[in-house]
Amino acid sequence: MTDALALSHDELAALDEPRLRTAIPGPKAKAVIRQDDRVTSPSLPRAYAFVPDRGAGSMIEDVDGNDFLDFNAGIAVCSTGHAHPAVVEAIREQAGRLLHFSASDFFLPIYADLCERLDEIAPMTGPTRSFLTNSGTEAVEAAMKLARHRTGRQYFVSFVGSFHGRSYGSVSLTASKAKYHQGFGPLLPGVVHVPHWGEPESIDYLEQVVFKRLVPAEEVAAIFVEAVLGEGGYVFPEPGWLPALRDLCTRHGILFVADEIQSGMGRTGKMWAVERYGVEPDIVLAGKGLASGMPLGAMMARGKLMTWPMGAHGSTFGGNPVSCAAALATIDLIEKELLANATDVGGGLLRDLIALRERQPLITRAAGAGLMIGIDLASPIVADAVELAAFHSGLLTLRCGDSTIRMSPPLVLRAGQAEVGVRIFDEACRMVAERGPEAFVRAGEHEAGPDVPEGA
Image (cartoon, rainbow, N blue to C red; front, side):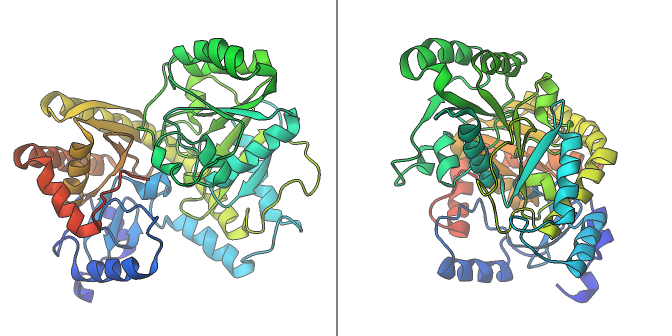
């Protein structure tokens, strides 16, 4: 790409349509992929051969100068869009003052500032306290430790289909794919998995099977639950399920831990997805969109629960001041404008996708809230093919579940961009229907290696 063709940040952000100038992937992208293949861990799952270089708003440009419409936001991470000026300025100002000083051993003003803001937006009444981490999986690990310490109980419950992370404790809770456990056992003892996520049958299963046959309720420390299944397929629970689960936890003195790492921070049009169901958790976990792309997670707990002693848990980098600055700017943007935008633009996007389902036989379901929308395809290979076809047309989506395409664009997505995204997705489905999914998956094998991954 020549300088004459380069767009400024504002010009890139203003685009509604992708602009593809080379074959996909282009020559520079192929060079990066070859380098990556030599030196990085082969454990990293790559959906397709996208090599990003810079972004603005809901548009992102690859190393060859191709401009893509981003409907995955780096797995629902870039909540305020790519390089939002307010977030960039907050990062720049904080980086010029202090890059790091460990909050585990010293008092960082901005750490306390962020914890105070989290207390204000936490989805539970009464005071809360927060522990800041580098990622969502670390927030899960912190909650596991706090729950065992606070209750004196040993067991955890999580649900089949759920994803809570891939570090040792969190992957023991995860039950979305067997491959996440393969080769790493034995995993953390004391974890019980329950079927029927989001359905009334799971409450009966807990009472009649888990508590009656497996472990007594009085030895269960916490139930970990995604308010919306993320990696498991972008599935929303039945309306009364989370309240029923909350009641069960209250009856048995079990801590209710809401994993909002993917569904929180305005993703569903509410700051937290549990707010859609009138449920107050005991502990809520945040990550991904919390700091617009800077590494940060948080475990927020009712103040009366956060009673572990000094030194019981800590983190060298958790609550890094630059990440905290990005989070404070992110929260302000979400509260002031992006919650409303996610509701308005997301509502239109979902309506258009539901209408598309009526005329597109490859689509079996389109459902969601805000800008957290799942589209089920006819089979896993069809989902892979549609994802790849959309990519080659300039739309970035991401597979999840068994055969679901997730749409989790930045919360700054404009209505015009949403309309373009639906049009490209429609065209991708039509191409796959006409040419057959095998043609696209074979092309994907040449781009990204022999194993086309199922998402992350």
